[in-house]
Image 1 (cartoon, one colour):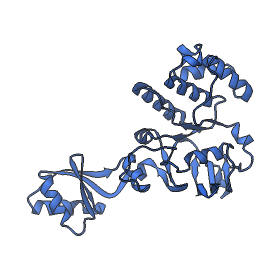
Image 2 (cartoon, helix red, strand yellow):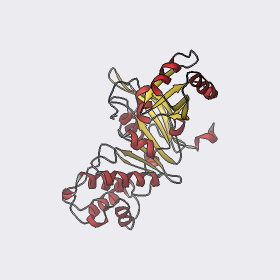
Image 3 (tube, helix red, strand yellow):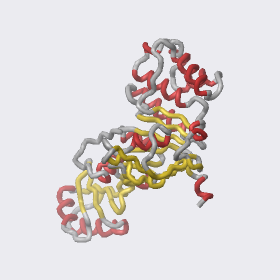
Image 4 (tube, rainbow, N blue to C red):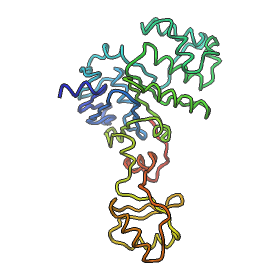
Length: 313
């Protein structure tokens, strides 16, 4: 519906990109709502970077269409690009220029924003004290921060950040994480690509997971991570409780996890769980709905349950 289009900053329909016989992105239907932080995840070869490159006009789709800010931008992104900022594959700055001079240069050639905003952006990303040092002297973390400042030139409505915390020390990661969360307040939308699953879980409102060029699942983080019908319990004898509950045919699965038991059963079976254990002389000391981690969810939906928890572009 035409009225619904205004609620999304990105809409793709059948978006496809082939490289010879390889489908980097295959029939992608993605919707990114306006406002907040949207996480884009995927294992190696998932099509994440190719998708962003098409939206930014760096790669042309083989087929399919996409809309940006409610307007068809499949073949011409020029209007939309004025409202977007991005760091993809790391920004390239001039080593002999200072951080401030680099931002001034790119601001002039891109005609993005006003000169007065540069000091504010350098302060925002924590580079005010090193703004007039040459880029060649910057650490990896400082270069990442300058990249974020660059992406924010012109106060974009849609911001793409690819691995923005790479090279940062733990304190810097926390600072940038808070910055990203704040950037997603109001009408601005931040699309965050990151292999740091715990980071995405803490910062993102919604996520989309790609695998082999296709969309596997998308939705609000809190909804995706809520285990349907699973209960986390502790008892007076967890070893015996595990054996007893595995003997009940109405319980789908029982597993041990971090000092408690995860029981897959319908939500209205809490009393039945308690009763079955009480009959065996075992008593429940704690019971609450289970919530899985994004790491575990990611590995399950991408079929990588035995794989490392690291995600790449």
